Image (cartoon, rainbow, N blue to C red; front, side, top):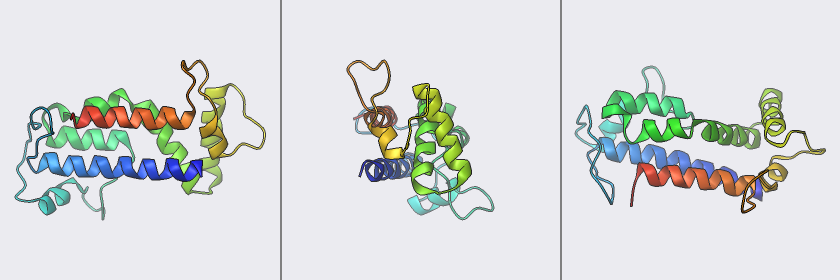
Length: 166
């Protein structure tokens, strides 16, 4: 259940990035503040969506923070609001992507990366490790105590609030 909650939350994060990016590129403003300075003016949202898809690819990836930052720097002045927020949270977002991959894929290489990340965070690899078990573990030194699930979801929510202030 915990893994599904995390996976759904990460999918919502991807959707948020895509939709907010397209809306800003189309000239929309956030509920509070000014619209980002755009370098181009697509005639509609469909055209804006086409602009973000890299040459030779069928779609734009929204899971890799560095990809989204580079795209933002190409289309918005100083990449704002995406690039600064994503760069400032790059490690956490990369960890979240790794956890998402460990849930969604059953490859040995993904699982090894996940185990290495857990070792780094906990100092050891718990026996019978599952992604859900890790997400339910309390983050060491967190005060008040929060689980890794709460930690990652909180970081994504905070980043979203910085990208679209309300």
